[in-house]
Image 1 (spheres, helix red, strand yellow):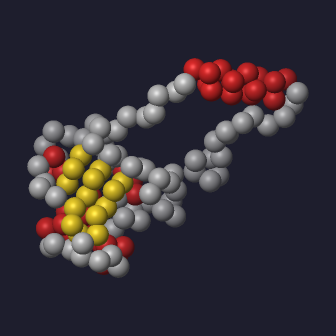
Image 2 (cartoon, rainbow, N blue to C red; image 1 turned 60 degrees about the vertical axis):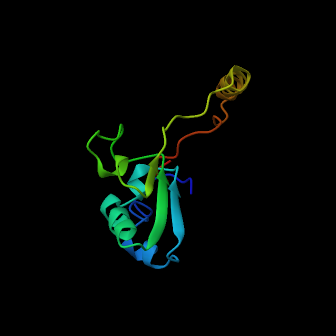
Length: 117
């Protein structure tokens, strides 16, 4: 799941959601650390309700050295790194936004703070 964090979706990956999944479900979170209730995940894994988890994002980044995710046998931690921006696309978008600004038009890819992303 790759979604922004809003108040409506914060902590959505929790005990109630895990209870709806089959026992062999595997959680992959590449979206936002704030979506996951970490203690609920550890409880579900330790109870054998989930098969495992692969986590790329965390509530606290970098993930503290003593965090239980590092040593849990059912959790794989991956390095969170954004994609590489291709200069030709970045330049094209910046140039287009410059033209939009000059003509009084809305800019491309604006953040909508009311939506939370």
